[in-house]
Image (cartoon, rainbow, N blue to C red; front, top):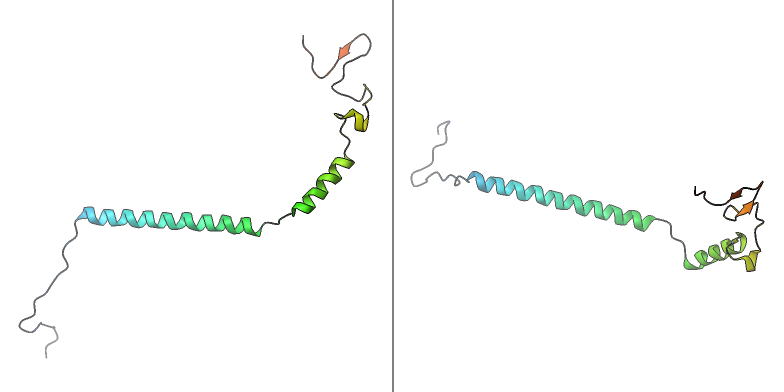
Length: 108
């Protein structure tokens, strides 16, 4: 037996057909698009996981918080309930001070 392997009679050496550069470039482009698609899926899954892990508030608790806020914070836009603001504390009311009319804005 020799050091070099030589095929026996009847065997022929078969080489894979040479692929044109266009096919190689097309395969590379398809691989890049597939990797980009996988990356988009992974980021979407990560965002969904973060959304799922976020703390939730029940409708019951939200209703309680809303009622607590509306009963504790005075809203003088409803004067029948909370009463009128004195003119000096109301930034939108017009009142005279030293013969000068001031209000929410000055037009000259």
